[in-house]
Length: 144
Image 1 (tube, rainbow, N blue to C red):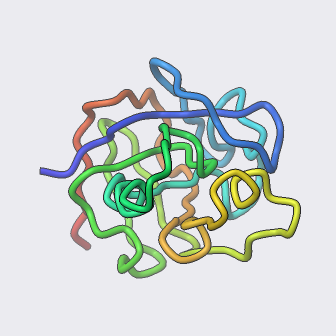
Image 2: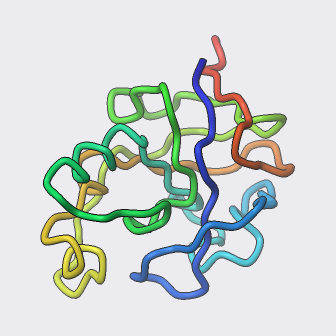
């Protein structure tokens, strides 16, 4: 079973995020209170716990949100999902819009860790159906 391991927000772009108890996602907007919310294709970022664990094996002490991910997942191969995939996360629906991203040079995450997994392993999505997301919510790929 795939699930949400943690939910995180930040008030400023380019910084690591901090875990919160729950996030409220709004259709065509993203996460209420998050710096990346708005009418664009990268409203929410997702990263697999497995990718973070790989970085931990290099000796780094990492926490949820350190790679600026909004949703840390477990048990789903995010980086191989095709663009356009719809994910049910709890009662919300998210649509994958981008796989990976270019990491900017002054990225706090890259400075902190020496490497950033978001460019290769992170994905981005828009909100199709709003609601609340908390750690433990199930994630499933919606079949067309």
